[in-house]
Image (cartoon, rainbow, N blue to C red; front, side, top):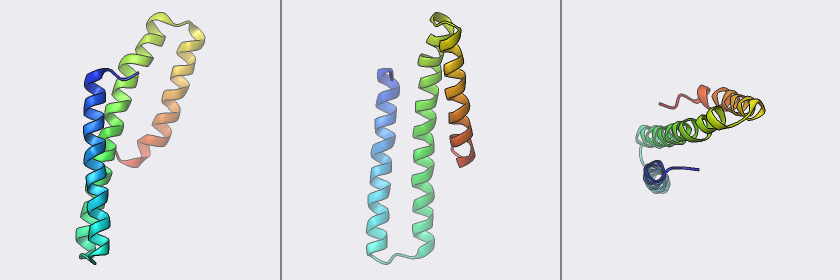
Length: 96
């Protein structure tokens, strides 16, 4: 579960992404210059990457921490497996 501060940050990031995607649509409909559209795509990808980082950090601080402090060996192994899957999928996308 997200703590209120992380949730607020994440929702703000997603609102920003929504605005950027809407701008992309307008740019394409308006036949804007390709480089300008590409820069806007890059900005949206960056905002999504930051949203992912917020969520990942919250998951580690809350869910993973709980499994390691209060869970049994099975719970810890499950969280490790989840993190490895996330890092495998998410890590290669260049999110910062």
